[in-house]
Image 1: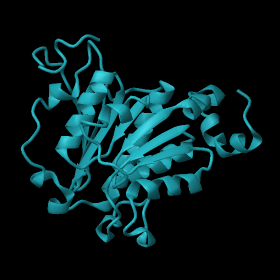
Image 2: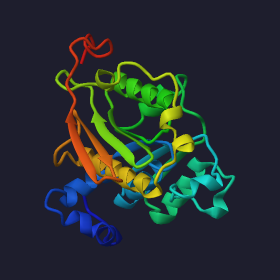
Image 3: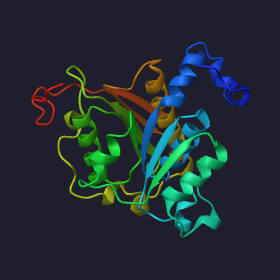
Amino acid sequence: MKFASTDLERYSRTIILPEVGGTGQEKIFNAKVTVIGAGGLGSPLIIYLAAAGVGKITVIDHDIVDISNLQRQIIHSSKDIGKYKSLNAKSFAHNLNPNVNVKAIKDKISSINAKEIIKESDIIADGSDNFKTRFLVADTCFKLKKILVSAAITRYEGQISTWKNSKILPCFRCLFPNMPQNDFNFSCANNGVLGSLAGFLGSLQATEVIKEILGIGVSLAGFLNIYDLLNNNFRKIKVPKDPKCKFCSNAKN
């Protein structure tokens, strides 16, 4: 691929990485990524994916910007209060990098539209804030054989993992077989969250997405990384594949 001079300059710090080069940057240009949620995790995700030059980014979020979001959702500002987060994220990404194609969906992801939305992308990055959406996205990604990079945050703690449909790797349901009854004990609205934690985990998500696009480094598939920023603790847990998993044990890969 022949790069325009402006592209060579814009992405030069990425292209000179030996693991990336021009071939890797072309992979980024051709990648299609869907981001679920344009909030605390979605904000840095969208910023870094757009900055990297990801060819097509689909953002789905039905929520509107509220003043309480601004402490951590850095893609939005005071002048954006009352606007749809997805549309605002599209505008922000376009201003950052006009070469990126961003599709904004201001609907709520549901069992009705999840398949149609997810099937269009290579990789899904889930930054949603409730169990119902996380389980729906994880199940749909598994069925469609899409790579899922999922993260969650509350208070000072966050976790991140990558999930793939594989005969040897665990699925999301191997670790979380049943959906919790409610989100109260994990909700940022009820329990609070350190704003910078969202930036930290969202940036990690963007990094893992780009690694999967490029096929470089060590994947998080099969592992769960847990961060406790208050106590400066980090744990990497190996997630075993459950041979009795009702979701993936009989799946045809």
